Amino acid sequence: MPVIRPMLDDDVRAAYDLTVAAFDDLPQRRGDPPEPHPDSELAQIRYRHLVRTDPRGAWVAEDDRGLAACALALLREDVWGLSLLVVRPDQQSTGVGRAILARAHDYADGARGRIILASSDPRALRSYARLGLALHPTVWGFGTPRGVSAPASVRRGGADDLPLTEAVDRHVRGAAHGPDVGAWLEMQQTLLVAPERGYAVMGADGELRVLAAFDDDAARDLLRAALVHAGEREVTVPWITSTQQWAVDVCLEAGLKLRTDSGAVFVAGDVGPFTPYLPSGAFL
Image 1: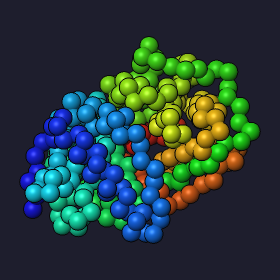
Image 2: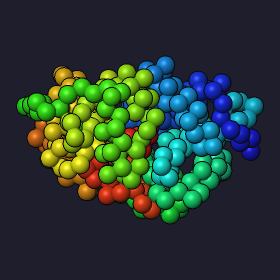
Image 3: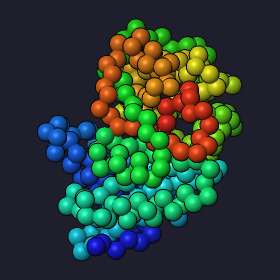
Image 4: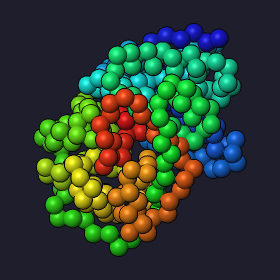
């Protein structure tokens, strides 16, 4: 069994490489093409950020071949989230994933809420359900938006908008993202703000990173603005559960396709209404 230990800054590059290998393995086993890889330098900001803000939630498993597994968890205002769990393909189904998940989940001890976003891998879905979280299947929107207009009320945001993001986050998920907003900006992602109504973060790759609002109308405006911001590139709108009908409406309005094979949102405890909200894959 690989040795499990706290993750260090020096492990970040190896953890990123492990993530690429693990996420390429699932589509390869299914006979599907792999997903495009993110910019490695920008992606590593996430790992380094969480090692520094949440050292009690950052773990790696190591053997004579290098890193065999990695888990990253965060705690924001007593709401815990699992940011990452990856296991090297040759170590999957050996027990190392279960062991390192237990270490990351120990960080949730005493938390009033828990959040996990899961891939469609049956092993991941089984593992998270066993932790006692409720499973909510998701659909994802994808394609090139057509015929969408950006509301004039939505503008580019910045560090000065942190108080708004905190207020909206506490409304929809019971906890602010806090320092994670700075990490999004450092990763060169675009913050969009509807003053006093909500915010969204859009990645340079056309994937919506997060969207939170005080009401459905504000959420629709923010999603339209995010789609327009993407320009002519293909976009992805992830983590749409059955409580986010406003997001389905905008995706269909923009001519996006919907897919149902994209995993699930798991929640437990007090995480607010969790709507209107599309959570962050990195920061929950």
